[in-house]
Amino acid sequence: MALKAVLQGQEEYDALPDKVRDHYIENDGNFFLSVDGQTKRETELGSKVAEFRDNNVQLLKDKVSLSGQLGDIQSRFSNVDPDIYQKLVSDQAKLDKREAKVVTNVDLSSQIQDAVTNAIKPIQAQLNESQERESQAKHNLDKATFRNLVSKTAVDAGVRSEAVDDVLGRAQNVGFSLHEGTARIVNNGVVKFSQDRPDQPYTMSEWLVGLQRDGGSHLFKPSLSTGDQDRVGLDESRMTGGQLKNPSVKQFARNLEAIAAGKVTVTRSVGRSD
Image (cartoon, rainbow, N blue to C red; front, side, top):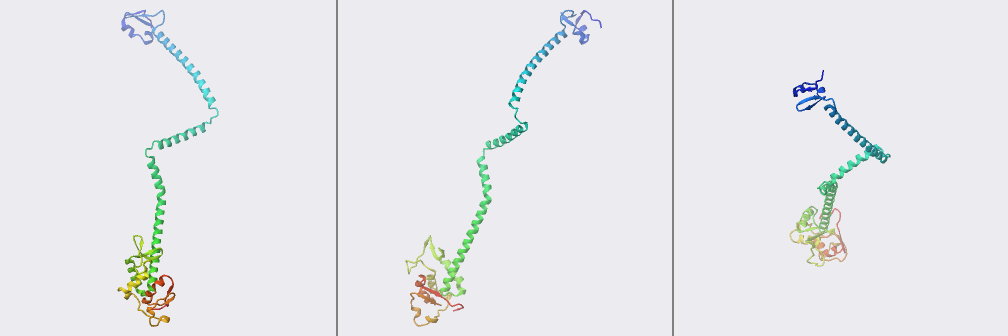
């Protein structure tokens, strides 16, 4: 394609191919073929070459700088095992996560209290159950001990065997209970004392004498004397010591003080039904 030295107007210039237009320069609306100096394309290419050169220079400087830094890093970490380093980094991340969770927990004391409560709850339940069993066992033992005390004292006082349970119920109703291993009436922590012997506690034996006298005679066996005690006036006598065999209620009452003091012992014949 032949190049014209001068193009008349913008239309002629626009009709040229792109590569051809780069060889023309504009002057007052006309386009002239450039024969001296750089064309527009050359000017654009020149600026790009300069930019490319500057970029290369900067990249070279960066390379030198990074090479120095890399050498320093390699020197500092020459003895570091990459696998061990990665494991340490992973462990540290896990530790930081746990620490952050604890530190940022505003209800830490509540969590600790809940953990302690949950830990001791089974132990406390076992302890409570053990204490309940122990308390129940003690209650049953005290109940059996009290029953035996009342039964023995009642039988020794002449209460009929079939009336022992009745006497036991009456004794409980008047306030007798187990106190320090014996049957006593205790009011507000104070042991009741005998009216006849103010220096001595009120006893089951004394109460039985009053029970027989005050309408409870039907609970007792008939008064009979046997053996060495079968003589006139014996019911009126008082013993200072020894053994009282198969006593009547009256004999038992007469010797109550000596029996209570342990000076007189009471025995009954096996199989006696009176």
